Length: 511
Ligand code: HEM
Image 1: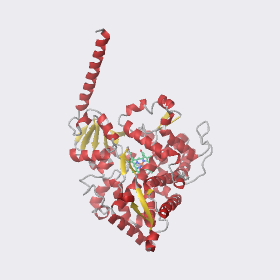
Image 2: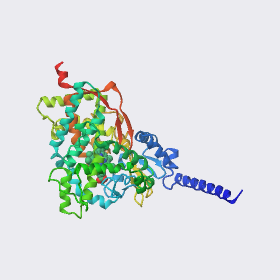
Image 3: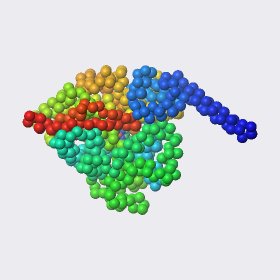
């Protein structure tokens, strides 16, 4: 036996020893050791990585909280919090709980540098300034100025669905709802239809690219340090440029801004878009006012965030509303009757306006709220880092540096707040007492909470309140062969195979 052999054996023992020490340090981490959870999760992040990989993390976390209570240890340094009363502690303004390194990996690169957007940045002051710069464009009053453009998307959508009804062929409604969401984002962002509804397809395969981004984010986000070895590594991207799917979002955005070459050498946009109501025009106006405070790079980054964050999330919500209605025929009948009555009493126009829908169709409003409660688009904990001094959450002191977070799927189904939490009961939003209602409203995490809550939610509400009544007014929609959809949690809980049969209601009335 030579000395190399003994050295090898020694190295193996030392490595095994180091791993063992690491596992035990994880297991008995001070302040977290007595928080219950799955046994393996205390030792290594691999438990969570595997659990996320299975694509069902939202239901896993619901079950864990029902078994263990408000606090569940889902990783050596990760605590999932299930009690809605903790929302203001973790997500409240100026509480010092910053986003974790799960987020920055969801950034595009420009000129080989990662570019943080509103969603991905961990820099609190950059976030504050940028949010202030762009928030006005997302306000309901600004968005309502684009309502006729949204109507034009709805009109193409109805025409396309009529074709399926005429041919009596089943349609993958889930895909079409995403085409709709994409074209609406195109209208409010760039005053452009992106061609999804006209062509009935995934333009430039951008939906597929975003899907790839989400799979990457959900898995790599469990061990974010790996990002520097994977898509965060310029060498990997140089060798395998096809992997750079975040940049397909950037390319898609640049093409939407200007199909030719949008940029000059210095990064300025060639021609200022005509002053309009879309976000591109509004933000270029902000840039002109103060180029130092808001660069064209900033504008591009935020426009790209719309492309990334705006279509999938809304499509998931639209699918949830329609699917839950199709599975609950009594509720469907009630909502269709409400729409028909409003139409026959001339209380709504054609196409229906947002104001009419939100004021004249209260039952529809309850249906939307309930669907968003039961099937929130985001399906993992929204991670935050506990500030250095630590914090008391659900009566327990959690040390600084711990990753905590809440999953909307868990919180929205809290048994203390919602009776029959797994049931689709829109009536709860109409029949509860004012106190119950207030408590329910405060326990919904579908759009996040606090300073990092969803800035784009009014875009989605405009779509929901306009396209759903329009569809139900014109068509009877049923699940083809009563087949269930398939869902997969890849950070967003996407649904697939929502195949439906469409019949024109005007034809049903004739028979
Ligand atoms: C039903 C539709 C939507 C849902 C359920 C949704 C959900 C969310 C949630 C939960 C967050 C917070 C994430 C976190 O804290 O980790 C968020 C943030 C964000 N959302 Fe949405 N979203 C929707 C639609 C949109 C749309 C249409 C846009 C833009 C076109 C958008 C843009 C953003 C941005 C930019 C942020 C980051 C805000 C910040 O950190 O200041 N979202 N969204």
